[in-house]
Length: 166
Image (tube, rainbow, N blue to C red; front, side, top):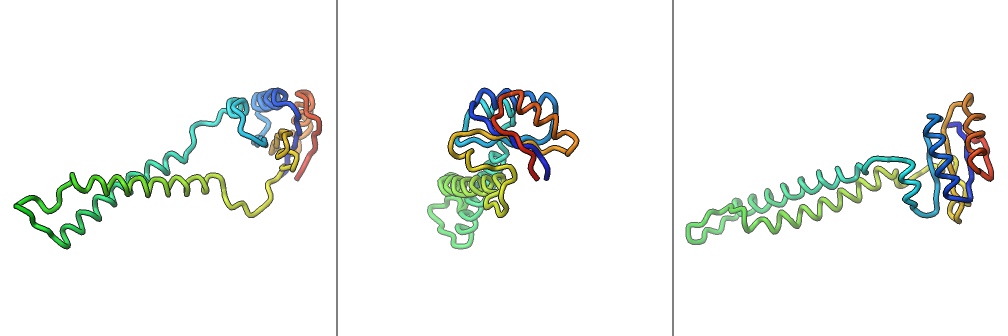
């Protein structure tokens, strides 16, 4: 994948460059930062994470499984006490809740790994070790005919280094 990499030392310059690139619709933008910054999240304007769907589905499946396994066990090995129903939902709520928490949390971790693409077997295109030390980076995946325009936008907004990469 071809693209342009810009290195920034100031956060404000990075935010201005990303806003300009989004306005120009230059291509897919990836931002590298040593720490999460709310300014970057705001300018990237990503919606809510899809990991919450994994949590919801895992929780519902866990609660269903918790109730089902408790009812199955009591029907398989019945303990008749004073004419009470063998499969009552009230005492099985605790087990259903515990299974909901367990399966929901495991589904959350699985969703996090799936969406973060962990483990990443190939090196990320456009990454520079300086981005872990305090510099900020913007990788714009764009076709070769837009590279000059993207590089000009990055330089105009304060990039200290701009280079085309493959």
